[in-house]
Structures are given as structure tokens and as C-alpha cells.
Length: 290
Image 1: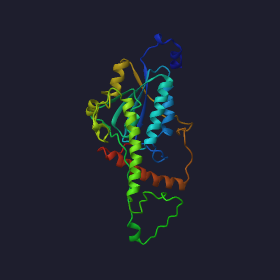
Image 2: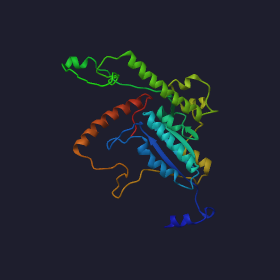
Image 3: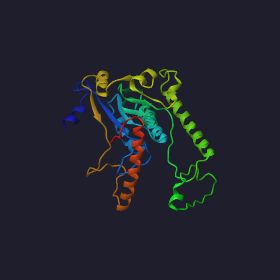
Image 4: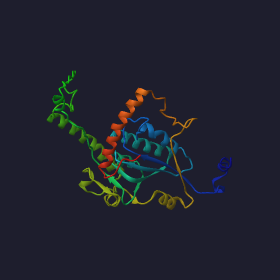
């Protein structure tokens, strides 16, 4: 009740400082996800972003990022939603990098009007990577014949159970180059006037926060709490914004009972996704974050 009455008072008569909403984006960026392993994607992030930007009295929204990357599509969707809300609500976006904002994680960080990292954070990795495994001899060894029927000569391109074909590799690389150019254009646009003219920036390499600052990939080094208090006053409060919960504590979006079959399937899929996420983190010398 006291909080409600305080809101009715003119701002100049209210005690206390400004409240800055904080959104935490962490984990590998993937389009899927499930009850066993929540994913970082637009579907999961959008409701939280909407709540954060809806705080009328907040002059800015703080976003912390801790992600080794993942889906370029989901990364761009999250980037676009942040910029759209920033324009609509006329709020400044301050991005704070934790352990890592690399590849798709850095793409999302570009949505910030300013990017601030720790000196030991990892930033960059502006490139595109595709990976997989090949098993062309496995079926022969176990005595299994694989039969595939297609309409369209390229429907089994990059099939892991067939030997690699040079034309398939060339096609994949052409797609990677297209996506890479989109990424490069985003960096040049968002970091215009700040980015250092260095070819290594777009080579896929990644750097510490200190080196990232020298290259113009970020705007400063610091800690979120201290930085926000420095900008908006020592009485500034940080409010972590999370997804809403229903009557019995369940998260509102996308929650439904899970059958035994779907649970088992989800567990198996979750194990694969966990392995893929671990591989993403390990590229930067880090372990998967929960």
C-alpha cells in the first residue's frame, strides 16, 4: 500500500533514487528448448524485454549478456526486438558483458547504445561456424544398409552417412559468407565511428574486454552496479526483470503437462543440446553455464 501511495506523489516529493530494470540473457542461443533445458531465443526473451521497457520512469534498461553464441537468426531477432522497444519507449540500452558475449552473443550486445565489459570478459568472434560429424563407413561396419529416397537432387546435401562432396562444401561456405556479411554490416553500423580499422576484427577471433575496448568493440570497462550508480546516482536501484509466473508458480508462457513419452524424448534431446552448448562454451575456455 505504501508503495502504491508513493507512486501517486509527484516525483520531486518521492524519496529514493531511480530504478533501472535489468534483463539477464545467458546461455547458448537456440531456436528450440524445452522443460529440461530452457533456451535463449526470442520466444523466451520477448516477454521479459516487454516488461523491462514498460517501466515508465526508468531512463534506461540494463541488459547483461553471458552467451557463447548460437543461432544467427535468433540472435538477430532478439537484437531487432531490443532496438524496436528502445525506439518505441525512448529508452537508452546499456549492455553489460559477463563472462562472454561472442558470435551471436556479441550480435545481441550490438543492440546496446553502449557496451560495457569486464577487463577479463571475452568479446568478438565475428564469424560464422557450422559443424557436424561424418559416418560414411559406420553402416558398412555394422552391416546396415541405409536407403534414402528424394525428390530433388540436393535433398541429402551434407548427409553425414555419405562421403563429403566438394560442391556441397562450396555451397555451405557460400551461405556462411552471406551470413557473415550480414553480421559485419551490423557491426559497422552499430559501432560506426568507434570501430578500429583492423582486418582481424572480422576474422572470427575473440578478445578480452581490454583488447575489445582498444578495437572499438565495446565502449568501456566496468561493473554494472557501480556504473549505473555513477550515472544515475548512489540511490539508484536495480530491479531484475523475470518472466511472469502463474497461480501455482509455473512460468506463464509455454507451460503444459508433459507426457512420459515426450519427457523421455525431451530428455534425450536435452542431452544432445547440452553437449552442443558445452562445445560452444569450451571454444572460449569456459564451461557451460546454467
